[in-house]
Structures are given as structure tokens and as C-alpha cells.
Length: 219
Ligand code: ADP
Image (cartoon, rainbow, N blue to C red; front, side, top):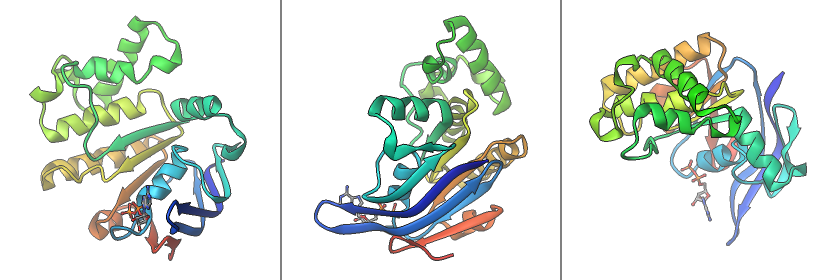
């Protein structure tokens, strides 16, 4: 099954900037890929479109078989909640809330009871190696641990696609390497993962690289 199918995707921002110009991109289930390019090449715009946070000006977007252009805002939110997990450079954890509750909060859409949400959250935290940090709040965790909490939150609902936007950008080299190892491990367990990065070295360590420049996929 194709998880992502972009055909002829163009994105023009008000003011006339063409951030994407005719992008075709297919991602199959089980892939681990880098979307790599210099600053201003269109990576964030591509992430927003693949993540269904924004719609293209032109072209077609299908995510796990759903034609994004035909969905209502409500249906899009549901698609995003069920099928896509997001990890950001700056973690975006809720301050003052334990790691366990940060992850459990991400499962609200499932309609599971609070007890079951917390059980699933605990399993996800164990999976990322944080069994002993569940009751810690974000300010009591290192950057690398915070990012692992964010990854646990993103994968707890078993999404079809994990989108990681510069996931190591705020981390020191060792913590960044550990986060990349974790993404590899999740991929070996079946997760489909796209890592957005400006860093050619990070991209080179992943099985597939999609190179973006001036709004186009160049390789
Ligand atoms: P990257 O993530 O690779 O740095 P972006 O997708 O952020 O690239 O940007 C691609 C181009 O689109 C850049 O020229 C940027 O200035 C422009 N751009 C991005 N967002 C907006 C916006 N909201 N309005 C206008 N132009 C934008």
C-alpha cells in the first residue's frame, strides 16, 4: 500500500512564492526516508502538505488511500489523528505534565478510557527506553529524553506514517544519534518514517533520500 502519493503538487504562497513546483512523491509502507535540502528549498511546505496541515495550490495528495482534497476539515483532522504521527525539532511537550500523561494525551482521539490510554502510553514509553522516566515532567528530562517522549507520543497510536521534522536539530551529537537509532528500530518493527532534514550526513544514514531544491524533487 502507498502511504503517501503526491502527484504534480504545487504550492504558491500569497505574494507569489512558489514553494513547491510540480512535486511527485510516493512513499510505500515500511519505508524509512530522508527529505533533504537546504534552507528555503521547500521541505517544511512539503511536510505540511504530506501531514495534511496545508493543502496544495495544484496537484493531488493521497494519504493512506484518502484523497485529501475531497475531505472536510473535520475528516482531515480525523485522518491526521489516526494515520499520522508528528515529531518536531522543539519537542512540543506540555510543560508541567508527566511523560506518561504527555503520551496519553496524544491518544485522546482513540476514545479509549483514561486507564487504557495510560496503559498504551506506558507501553510506548517502554518501547523508547523510558520505562524509568514516566513520572518525570519535561523540565526533569534531557533533550534526548524529551525527544524520545515526543516519539512515544507520535507512535503510541500506531500511525501509518511518522513525520519527523529536524528531530535531532536541538540535540547534541550523542543524543541525536540515539534518536536516529530509535527511528531505525521503529522502522525495523514496521513503522513508515519520513525524516525532514537540512543535514546531508543524517540523510545519508537513511535507506532512501529524497532531495529537494527550489521547490522541486531533484533526486
Ligand atoms: P525549508 O523548510 O526547506 O526551509 P520552506 O518550505 O519553509 O523551506 O520555504 C520554501 C519557500 O517558501 C521559501 O522561499 C520561503 O520563504 C517560502 N515560504 C514558506 N512559507 C511561506 C509563507 N507562509 N508565506 C510566504 N512564503 C513562504
